[in-house]
Image (cartoon, rainbow over all chains, first blue to last red; front, side, top):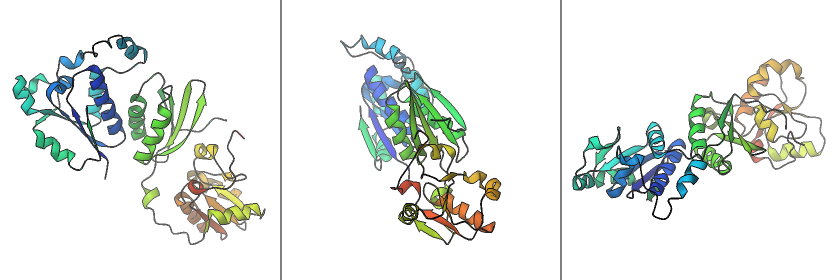
Length: 131
Length: 192
């Protein structure tokens, strides 16, 4: 049976986004089954507009150049790659209700679900991560 | 090191983690089983990543050659049969027995049926490289009366080779088990 990787993304900084999507794409490329549950501010990582302009942490703005110099793919590119590799993206229904967001506000190809949707996947995961 | 024979070259130069891995995965999906890919990367982390990736996907990491700033990783796409194939050739010897024969300078022939890229990185001194896929074309170069030891990585390809040689009238053919994956005797590579 293949490795299962369950990730919770609950923060909306650019650093957080890279942690989430680098691990997700690397795992999926290594034949793991991957699901990410996006909740609270983490929803920004898959929000149609927001995920194009995620902020660097305060005081770390100068790293923008470092990302460019190291030829790091953009977050939208990583998201697309993750989806291509079969990473399951789940948006948290409860947070969407609180923030008054619709499924249409997010990128294509996501699922919307509650805590149990994620737990059902994560219960026999080999790797569980929270960012 | 001389040119290593590969079936595909993948350029990941200038790309950062996780791109070399993601691209390698996509590329290996295009390969036939048994074929070898060369992945060129400048990401220093790719050296450890490629090995971890191969370990987890079951593909065979052959080795890496450093060429200035470029790391050239060699990987062979594994065959499901390597794990499942039932062994049928009845005459087998252990790595240790072969090592003893070699140390005693017995007159034996060692044939390595792995791919040339695998042979380039590590091999038993004096062994002859004939990849399994080309064995049939080279049978006439071998003497059916010789004592022949056939080696591969885990003993599966060499088992197929032993059966092929037996069919062709070779009756002193022995399969070396497990083969190079467990070999602790003398080694040489193309650099030496």
